[in-house]
Amino acid sequence: MQAARTAKPRALASGAGAAKAPMVQSRNRPFLALGLRLLAMVMLSVLLLLVKLAGERGIALPEAMFWRQFIPAVLILGGLVARGEVARLKTERFWIHARRAVTGTIGMFLTLGVVLILPLAEATVLSFTTPIFAVLLASLFLREHVGAWRWSAVLLGLAGVVVTAEPDSSHFPLLGLVVGLSAAFFVALISIQLRDLGRTEEPLRIVFYFSALGALMLLPGLVLRGTAHDAAGWLLIGGIGLAGLMAQLLLTSALRFGTVSSVIVMDYSQLIWATLWGWLFFSQLPPATTWLGAPLVVASGLIIAWREQVRHRRPAI
Image 1 (cartoon, rainbow, N blue to C red):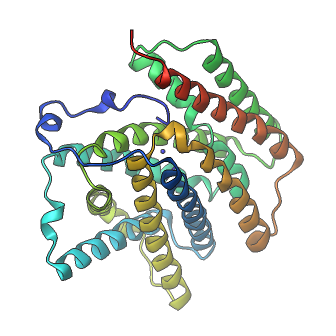
Image 2: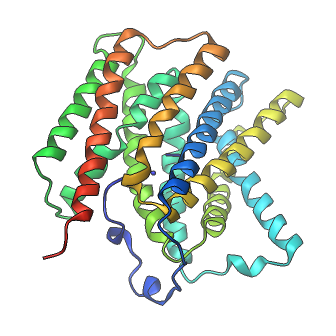
Image 3: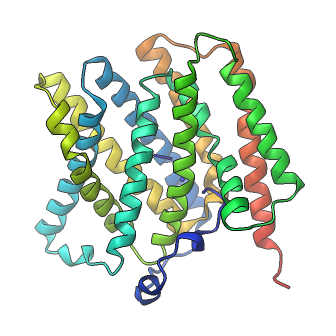
């Protein structure tokens, strides 16, 4: 649910459709962007906590994902209808929204699924590998030159993952590692799409189409895996929907006022919340390997963000 963090958004531009779409006016307001991103990390950590608690109560992930999408879509549509502002949902880039919904739903399945396999802190550390995948995507698909600094950062991040996972350790199953890294890869793809959509679409519209189209795709999961719930179960489901809505709005809004490379530093605050929730709700504290590996992964992301800032400040030749 987190934003490639360094790849260029033009890679997934929509061609003629994007050219016709009106540009959304936004200013570069770095401190506002940082604040929004920080709040987004808090809400994202709450979302992951609620999904993990829901899983322990027997609420299947496909059902939790459906409500995660359905509730925001209904709230947004209902609010716009009440204010007579449904026209704000008009878009010339429907198929770009649809593509983002497909990618986002896959990424959400992986991002939420990993917390059912791993403790919150370890799952969060794996999410920090998104910048690594951003660099790899830029090199492979955008034919972007990647210098020694960023390749070194990639290797440093991979070393951090190895240390955190502690090979041959029972506390970190292979399935959790694969799902966590796959989630980070999809977040890298989604971030490119969000930055591209943010040029022409306001955050409310982006979140609505992602939620509505995602709910449609997840409806079979609700039919097949949905069960009856008590009051506590419905409270968890409602919290998942609200936390997901707030996290998505904050993430999308932050990218209107700052680049991914400028706000990425706030993403690492999520580890603090994940560790706190793990301790309070599950009596889990990360092992020593996590505290040794996490700084390497964080340093990798910060180096990549710094190099991205340097690249963008260079005058064109």
